[in-house]
Image 1 (cartoon, rainbow, N blue to C red):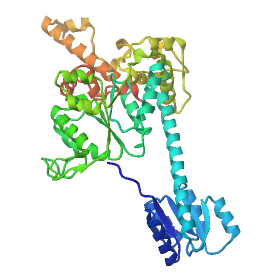
Image 2 (image 1 turned 90 degrees about the vertical axis):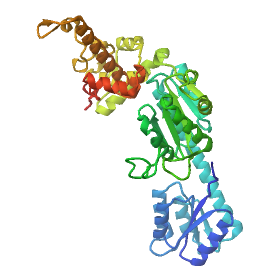
Image 3 (image 1 turned 120 degrees about the vertical axis):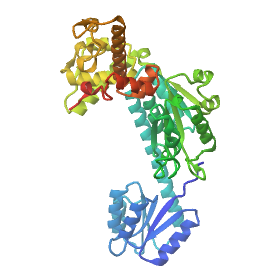
Image 4 (image 1 turned 120 degrees about the horizontal axis):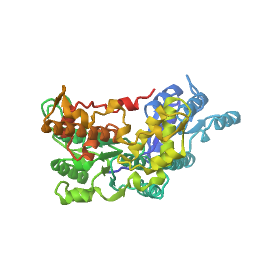
Length: 479
């Protein structure tokens, strides 16, 4: 539920009567008014709560009006300042306007002049705010285009972001792992009216099932064993902003029901609480599986899907927009060079051709990893040999897929066929897990989804096969 914002004015004058009259006139117009008796008190009040307009007397003890104006222009330049004085002093008026005052008025303050002047200052500030918002939106879209690419498919996504961001619609973003779903969600948030609020990103597949309810909706102290203090959930943390629910298809059905109720009622009921808490949150959900298929399979609620999918953005995998690959590869090289504090290397034509021919199962995330490694191991010109795109190019420290010959014997003795098959299976599983972790930048939740196993199964296999959680570290260490 949205409410109309009340404009705020700070009246600064050392005369009690002037402060009272000015405050009464402005309050009668529906404005929120605070007062201060000198410049020092005014600066303290501004630091605590920035107003839209400051009505500032010129002659005051401790810190006069012009001194206060200088500080205000330096510390809060967006605030409109109206100077007032009981003495017609042209030089002072000129100084005030040069310092950036919006207007200069004489006492006694007359309602027919004073109130309209404050209102015009408010309107100018609102217009400047709208222009600044537009500038930030354009900048955000330009940055988004730089990250997602310049292909026709990518430009279409940019157009969708531009159209949908200012609305209040709930959005579902679909696409393969690593295709840029969170990048799109962040662009929508930055181009929306909620850009000043928080963006909370949640990987629904990474939260243990027993903790999902508490993580999303919060809990009170004593709600369950171990709840030694009250804790806000992601909905409360995202209040006034955007909540990005990545891989929403991993939510248990019971939690899906609670989520639907939360969206309908715009409130959450923390575990152990006696009353609901109102939340103002825009939801952007993402999935690397087709949610309609999950609905038909009974794994996702149909009513929740239609509540979420007021607008759907479908991202194409990188292999279907290969014209983006050279642009993105050069960007990732430049980003890594900036991190390393040295000039960025160039890409040879042969390297570009090799990149464009690769299938990119890990999509943009995999391309980013490849280019970051190439920026470290390559020279001024990246060649095909600097690109690690196939399993055989993985350093020995990252793989344990032993040659078949080494599986035939153990301690000089021939091994039974059953043991050979088991060892080969383990080696293949280990290699597959490592390669998938490389493609997902070490994200085990995404790796589990790509391998079509649950998170717990992947974790147990990693422990059994001796795969460290940070398996990528040797290949991605930066200086």
